[in-house]
Every structure is written in structure tokens, then in C-alpha cells.
Image (cartoon, rainbow, N blue to C red):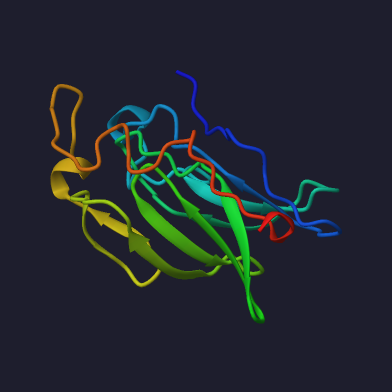
Length: 167
């Protein structure tokens, strides 16, 4: 069975910058019991990757949803925002969480829920989720109630873009 992760959307790049920021989809196969990853983590899946566009070398990566098993991609657009001296990257995926990262270091700053959710018991200070036991232990023949469902709290046809030139 093929395994891996995909990207869907072109990376935002700041002119004259040495970094591009890529979002990746969930691991394939997308259910943890089918991909055989013990803790569920699959490196670089449901992540933001900061890459040097000249060399392709990875500068940092942050995994938004390690072990995700419900087809809730974190692959969508990355929005780069300057708050005074703070350089941030914000993104929102199908899980309905607005993520704020330091775009220089990849450090987690905060996350805000934007839709009704019942997927995890709580979120650690690093942003890492602690999923419900029935999600972690799901088997092929089991149905799970989850919110948001597979359609998600954000979809790829809802771009988030702004430009000072068009205000």
C-alpha cells in the first residue's frame, strides 16, 4: 500500500525571502490503524514545512495534527502576517483550528477553535492534541461520531488572502 503525504496549494513566498511555507495533507492511508503507525505520528503529515526555495533544504516543520485519522487536512493556505517585530504564519485546516506560528522558528504561539469540535480531550501547550480514546483505538469496522465531520471546518475553495496594494 502506498504511504506518504501530499501538498495541494502553492506556497506563499515573500519577495527576496529565503523561505517558502508549505502545508501538507494527512498521512496516507489516512486512518492510523491502516498505516500501522504506533502512536499515530507520521513525520511531515498535516504540517507546515519551511523550505529554502533555492536548495529545498528544510528549515523547520511543525506538525499541527500528529496521528490524525479522520481525513481532516491541515494542507490549506498559509497566511504570512507581520505584527510589529513579530513575523507570524497563520493557517486553518478542516479541523477548524486557526493556528498561529512564529514563521522564523516554527514555534507554536497559539491555536483558536473556529467551529464546534469534539475530537480531542485537550490540547497541550505545544498545540499537540490528545485525541479521544475511541479515535485513537478506531478499527476498520467501527463508526465514529466526530465534529467537524469529513467536510471539515474549512475547505480548500475558501482562499484567505489580502494585499496592502488592494485595500
